[in-house]
Length: 158
Ligand SMILES: [Zn+2]
Image 1 (tube, rainbow, N blue to C red):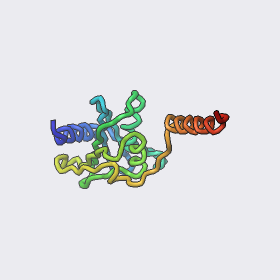
Image 2 (cartoon, rainbow, N blue to C red; image 1 turned 180 degrees about the horizontal axis):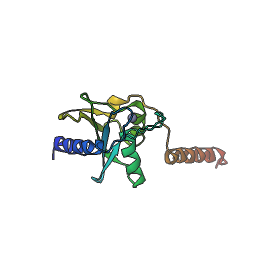
Image 3 (cartoon, rainbow, N blue to C red; image 1 turned 90 degrees about the vertical axis):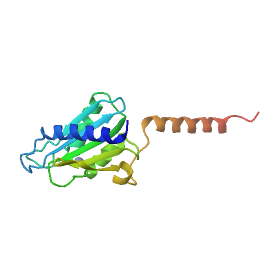
Image 4 (spheres, protein in one colour; image 1 turned 90 degrees about the horizontal axis):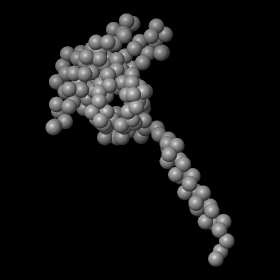
């Protein structure tokens, strides 16, 4: 199966999710659809708040739903906005995607009025030189390596 039908199907899911957006203040409605490694799709919609700053983006809503359901590995994301122009993920959402996805992760972006005219960008294109920390697992293995080296240094000569 080529990548194109997958992208289009994911964009349809994102467009459907956009219908559930809560955007009474900006009327800027966004939907997202996140495809997991196992083929499941998690939808997200933007959820605005009267305090504005607490507004949650569709992309992060989709990631949170997928992670809460036990998924950590993702194949692609589609983002559809109800504006005439495509809306690329904001910086916060790009960093959240970087928590789970590698640089080649594709993000399909479209306007709801022109789903076929979508644009695809990789996470590397959207967020180069992103912030990252070693995970607990890799930190532990680093510590174990360090301990191993130290104990070797402390070993009395044979
Ligand atoms: Zn965002």
